[in-house]
Image: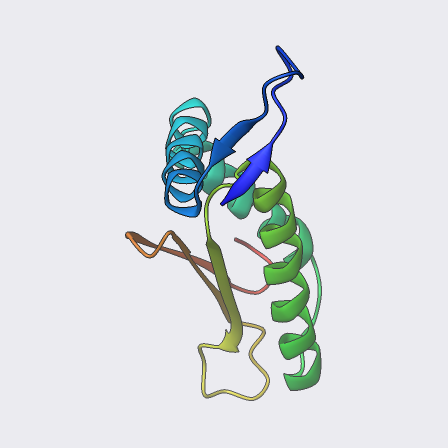
Length: 132
């Protein structure tokens, strides 16, 4: 049994059992999600813009690609978790070559993101000799 004091009348503490507390906690999360609905267009625009900013006019080798992928995923995850704090956000990015020609500057960046394990979104951006 959890006892908490009422902010309305401190002379009569409320008695809330663990089950009721859990139900209230779930309800609070649902209400908060309805207030802060996911804006798919806003998320896609943010992810696209951030990736394009990071890829702008860089030449990549394997080590830089791995580091860049991790940094992009981390930053996007932090930005989105601040706004959508009641959603579980999973961000995965991968920067890789799309050409077998070693002299080629063609790279593709994959960014996939999931929210609450209920939707999968996939974003692909191709850099072809510096052009997106």
